[in-house]
Amino acid sequence: MSWGTELWDQFDNLEKHTQWGIDFVEKYTKFVKERSEIELNYARQIRNLSKKYQPKKKEEDENKYTWCRAFYSTLNELNDYAGQHEVIAENMTSQIIADLTRYAQEVKTERKSHFHDGRKAQQQVEASWKQLESCKRKFERDCKEADRAQQYFEKMDADINVTKADVEKARQQAQMRHQMASDSKNEYSSYLQKFNQEQNEHYYTIIPNIFQKIQAMEEKRIERMGESLKTFAEVDRQILPIIGKCLDGMTQVAESIEPKNDSSQVIESYKSGFEPPGDVEFEDYGQAMKRTVSETSLNNSRSDNKAERSSKSKSKTLWPFIKKNKGSNPEDFSHLPPEQRRKKLQAKIDDINKDIQKEMDQRDALTKMKEVYVKNPQMGDPNSVEPRLGEIANNIEKLQAEAQKFEGWLAEVEGRMPVKSDPPRRTSVLYETQNSTPPTTNNNNCAQDRESPDGSYTEEQSSEVQSKVQPETAESGDEFDDPDEEMLPTIGTCKALYPFEGHNEGTIAVTEGELLYVIEEDKGDGWTRVRRNEEEEGYVPTSYVEVFLDSNAKDS
Image (cartoon, rainbow, N blue to C red; front, side, top):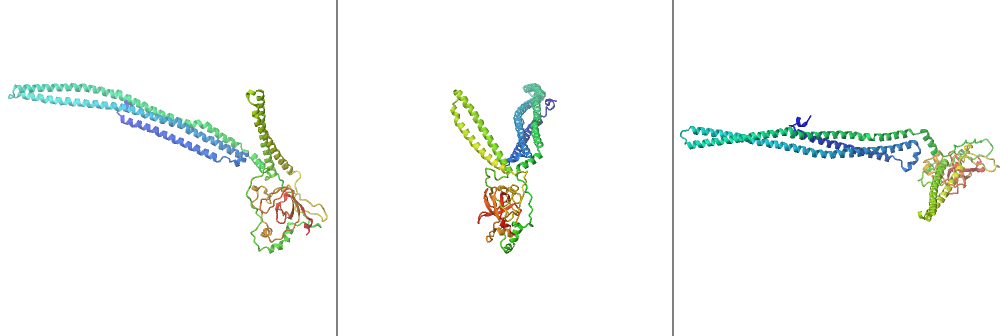
């Protein structure tokens, strides 16, 4: 079907239709542009989301758990996934938007040219038609004038009163008019033939050719629309394999999660190396020996004093401990339990050894370079590497000294680790006869190493407990804090087995090997009250000291 033959009289409608087609191309281009912007915004939001949940530096320890690694791997895959949506936007911009924008301008120019030619041809036909109409009216007018001249001549010729000269004049006028009518007829006939020829050429040759070009232009526009729609789908299809790989990666890391391994890792992360407390020894009150002051006896002996102080302020209490601001951790990791300290020290030693190996590799490489320079002076000066070799030697020496320092701390920790084959015993009250020597020692040195009354590790400031169980009565707190209270008598001595920093309120710092006075024994909460001098006293972990009870304090 040809527009030239079927739509020869639809010039205006074709002009409107082709303009609508170009508008549609521009509308579709705008649609793709907005889709591209959506893809970019989506990719940007996905990237920001992935970045937001990336592990912070302080969360690096989470990587030892498979479920954390799986999540972070998923974030990385999601970042790649976002990149593919950026590819979609880029391809749509280059392959569709830019192409259609350029094509729309081309088709506008082509359409304008075609319709200009058609309009010009139409104007020529209309001008010929007007010229034909003019010739036709002139012929009609001349014929009427000839008829009137002929009638006037016949009238004059029939009138006997008219002179012969007048008749002759009328006859000549009639002949002239007939000649003019004949000329107009010939001119009209000639132009009519010319017009018909032009009109036939216009409707059967010129307009069909123009309309055929417009039809071809329109079909090409439709074809380009089809290609763009196909490209629109192919742009998405091209990134599907990569998106599939991203999704496969997410699935693989999800399947790599190992619950048992992660639960075992919790043990590795938090195992302290301590052993549970041993059995409490039986206290035989039936034997004829002086009993060490116990919790009950101490409470009973002070009951009268407590009653007298019941009206005093009860706002002062030793517990709960107040957690202080955390300072910098010591270099030897002494703030950690033995097992965790051992792991940290070993990791530090491994890192130092790696640094030593790197320095040694550099030293070996420079040594070989120096040997090459010695054998081939033209390649370089052997003395040029000496400064660097000296610097590396100093670095190795420093690193080795650092390693020895940490190895010493590691050996110290491993020497103090409890032996599982010899479970500790927890002795709350010790007995001895009046004449027996030396005094009996407390044996729960390992079982409750660095353990607070509620089982929390307290030497590390960040792990110190927020609170301790309140004493049974408010008076007990007043008893400790009341400045008018009598100074408690000593019931024995103790030796510090480990250093204790005593950051919490109510505790006292001790150094390893220090001798102190015991003024209140462990009441089952894991703490012993000691005194250094008349002004310094407080609580220390029972597991940190070796207690020697005074035999005089056992008198009932």
